[in-house]
Image 1 (cartoon, rainbow, N blue to C red):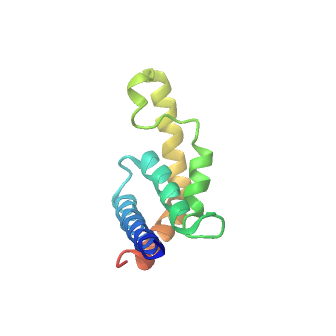
Image 2: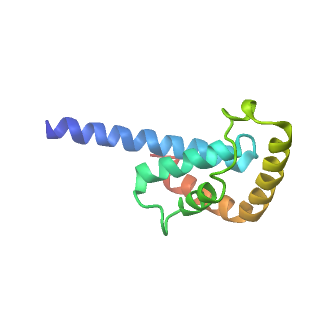
Length: 116
């Protein structure tokens, strides 16, 4: 049974590494679905490294905390135009503020996980 668990753990690790690489590439390419991608990257990071503090995934935890009040992609259809305008304006500011940190983190994540 322990062999099976080790195999499953390795398979899960590889799946998370592939997902982290995919999200990192997406975030480097542009801001499409930025908020959803950042939140997902924070979750993937927790799966890979546990606590995000002082890791390549730390910035995604920070952004997630800073934007937890903004509507995610699946909720936007239920929001007023005014709320979406305010939220989008705030999100653009977050993207600009964290752009360099996200770029550095994504490049580091790709260096570590893209060939796993």
